[in-house]
Image 1 (cartoon, one colour):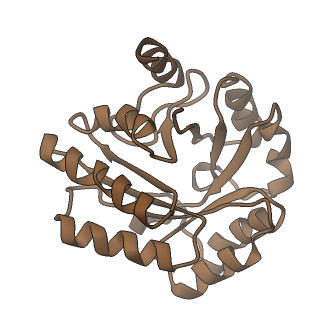
Image 2: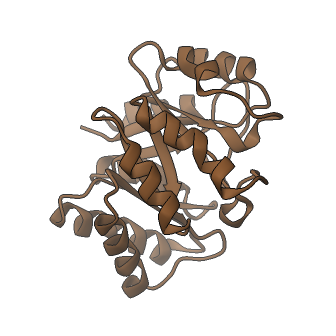
Length: 227
């Protein structure tokens, strides 16, 4: 059994998000990148995008974590708190203020999942630092952790994927893979090694939201060939 496949949609309007989500019928999860929207909207504007048994994940990245939201921290986290409280999934960064993380995690309804995420857009830290990051996530109250680094060679990929064994020992669901061309293989491998989820780009209605990201159809084709 493989992990989940999440289509990450960075579009300017709710209508464009809905269109891309409708074209991604084989996805398990739809990530709505709120920070890509041209204007601020309500969570209600996206409720229909999670039909067909798919989960909706809301992410609102600030510039310091590779995103585009330029408002205050309170404005940034408000829709995440609302989403979690209504049973949707939400992503909050490990580097966010502790009050932000506590607010999102504390608001989560029983059927919601809060992902606490950490990204390195230039490199892959050493094993000791990665283990420390994982420990902080597991102790944060997160339902799922997410550690994504940038790979420059196979050793970087192996370091990140090895976190899945450590996470399993903690009984802590973890998303772990690498960005970049050298990390592309990890986006597939993680699904077969116990990773909770991998992210892909939509085939229609938007491009990749991170370097090395496969499209949904490419990911499904590769999984089918490996099954």
